[in-house]
Image (cartoon, rainbow, N blue to C red; front, side):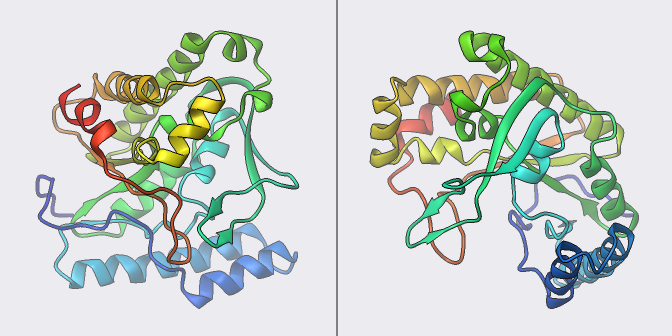
Length: 267
């Protein structure tokens, strides 16, 4: 494996569209007609293909296309200790003109990063099968706070002490950064899109209606990210991706990045 030092002029920041082989296999698995090992083998083959496609295009960093995931964030979150993803009527995420499946993240116990988090192995597979820098993307720490409603937090300490909650998320991510480094990762991308969401006038109004200050949240999210990566080794690059949501070519948030710019670039 040839390793050049990131960041690069160009690399992939999001997921690739799933090939038919994976979509067919996922349905077969959901219907009980395929076991996990068979599904994983099909995912492995598709990931090798998408790695080669990126390498053939001249990219110096490659990903697995997030082919093993159903979501960009909930899969990672649901693999943490103390956090589950459930289905609930009325759940899901509303994009402009389309609503996602009704998955809902809930906190059931104290948060922590497990030593056997499956995405560590997902990264190792990319590293083993690539000739250039392997990269993995995970949701940023703000995803937990932004996406989980107060009523879905079963830990009293988190529900009644905001700082304890933020510190628990931060500690979980500090351990995640260390674990990915120990797995060989030198290029980790954090998808921290909720900075952009909190720039949207409608979303800002919704947060204010809940008694939250969106500008304070932006600052607290920035501190959480800063603290989570502060102890990373010098040879590990952390990239941050922001967007306004993307599902079936539609979006969630709108508006300029001005409300978040200072926190992101100067704090």
